[in-house]
Image (cartoon, helix red, strand yellow):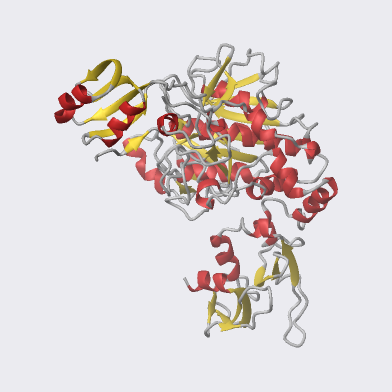
Length: 63
Length: 526
């Protein structure tokens, strides 16, 4: 997810235990939110978010 | 008679022309294709020399005949053709298609380029987001010293061989385009294959924080990721060129992969050695956004490069075309290293200097890019210097639009009064700051003109424009609306059509006028 450039404290939005990675140069976060924490995605400091997935493949032509 | 074909050599043998002083007494072995029903009759009547062989399953008789026997077969009903059985068959020389031979990226993408011949990417660092790199391969000679593990497992080195091949094409001593550049190895693939968005984000984040000059992404997905596209654009706006593989989902249109679909990424298609688009190479435009992709093409079919664990191997794919382009970018960055903001100019060259050989933009973008093609495009050193200084524009850099829309004195948002295209391809933005400008005289407000080169204004997002053009010059709020129909202005020769419109502010009731090109008016109306 991407956070806006405002000075939102991460601890205001998420429990620190949910944060997997902080990509500070990109102003983005990777988080793992439990089901009871899903409303935190409505925080105004979050510009957009997306579910993680692992379908990015190396682009060489297979035999 | 049912004869359909007689070998010319036989006809000449038995019926020589007057000028050919040859006797006709010699016998010759022939093979005749006959009707099976007539075989008994023909075998009985044929004046042959020696025994006659009949291959019943093929319907062919083979026999030595003289002229009378040949004439008999020519005249006989039920003989379909007569061939020279003494003719020898030779194995034709294998036809080697140049495009099928394997070449290294260095062979084809440097080509003969006197202007750039001594530039090998020295001082340039390239982030390779891939499966890892075999740093001990002799091709790399200590120029791949750091590996960042973005997967979180305990593995090291290259987990599949893909990354080593890719890195070889960029910095390999004998196979790479930029043989003196260095790489930062960012491993996002595990042994299972797929890379996750979060791993790739971590790698991109590292590229910014470790100040690499270039990023190579020979990976992709057919499904969009807005987060990843945004991240790639952010890396780009930090002055880092991102080369991303267009995808191997061709030959159908709208098959561009993510993240090469990102607006600011250099999306690289693949060609064979004859610079023709490879069948597998993904075609533009992008399915889920409106960016024209791919941007350029590189050699990606049967590419010879470094193999994980030592030695060499051949691979194909847009994965293999992308490192060639990254290598070219590294050489150009070294060439431009003395200049201010070299990345913007190199980025522009990669999007414009290709040779398309009349192939469509959807297939190869601007075309096949090599150092020789870039040299052809820019001419000589002087012309390149002039071109580079022109492309620098107003020292705005890659993040020019937000800067342009803020007053350089008081940092408050500016109002955008006019956008005008000029004959030379540049664009004039007329802006003003409500805090810093003097009071209007004769209805004319104190405004400032900022000139942008074409390559700069192409990077402006529609939403940036909309925000700026709706800003009221008086109160600074985004409350301007068009109060009357746009009026077309007279089009000057070589210029684009512009419209003038009356506007009013919903907040402060101020009135004014704006001049924009037609397409901007359409955006406003939307």
